[in-house]
Length: 244
Image (tube, rainbow, N blue to C red):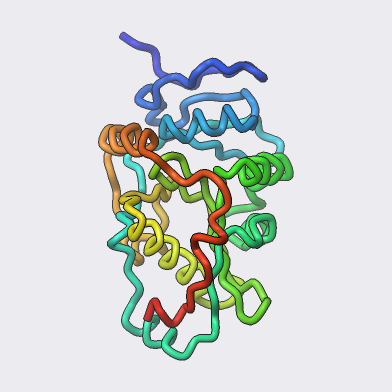
């Protein structure tokens, strides 16, 4: 019988991750401990349906929970009341113009039931490097030039792995998520990873996908031609009122 995790990873090694199917069931999804946050390691992790999640002072922890929370990009839902509120909104949405600011705002956002943040200084530096390499992206919501919401994650092939989002004003994260989903759906990216269950995401249309199904889809989507590099020019600027 094949042993389950957690597996110990060496720092600086290019060795592949153990199969995500070998993750523990308790705690749900813990696969490996250690390693590093190099670009190659992170890209290998995401392409295998694995993500890092740990708190300050903990070792690096790598996860692949079962089931997985995902969005079908053409099925993200905004309530009728919220869409009505956007009709006269002045907010504008852009891509990859304030990546570091979005990450920092996500790190500082209060999370019910959580003490501190998993977006440590090392995580910030690692994802900034992925952003500079063209694999990590953000969508930002602005009121004039004030950042009022945003979302960031990692794109490989035609698969987007959402990491975190924030609201500086009520509804800012909803607008960012809905705008991202619309953009991905329009470009033929069918699936967006949302990692673990969150009641707020469920209200917006997130669903559970058994890990084996999630992994099968990810392994196909990451092999498709993607869009490495900045998304700023191709995204342009979208009025939040267009989501109404």
